[in-house]
Image: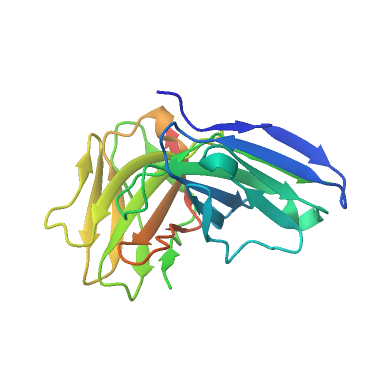
Length: 115
Length: 116
């Protein structure tokens, strides 16, 4: 079974530029998550999708971040314009459902550096 | 709201010895799940073990076991017979079992280094 795929793995941009990340979850997984992990901290949830609907985006900085999951499969996360504090690893995860015991399977992450 | 606390500084253990990584949590939810993840330097998050709040027995998965003390709100990870490949960051996390948005909350992690 293929795991969660993310691209690109690394991205370097200058502040005020735009960037987009892509995630393809495990086939059949209804729930998809985007996390931001700043160096030295644990991952922080940015947005959670159930199929193609948003379940939780309370910690997503909506003035600059946006995400979509068209057709309930793969997803893109966009930052426009980027700030220095957006430098982090962006992790995508998926689970079959929303129950408490649903192990989240994580992708390898995209490491973003904003100069 | 949920909170996970991991306060240990970087941990060191000799190869083949056991090590305990501490985790305390706070929640008002009556039912919840506790998780441990490993994050090697390559960056991926690897699921290790799960403990449900109503589970009567402590969870075990191979060399990993979870020392769950509900009254003290602690969920410490025990790694037995440490291996060099265990060197990584370890994150404790929790998620409530009720509610539509079952969000996973992570601690800030603990660095484990295994010495040969």
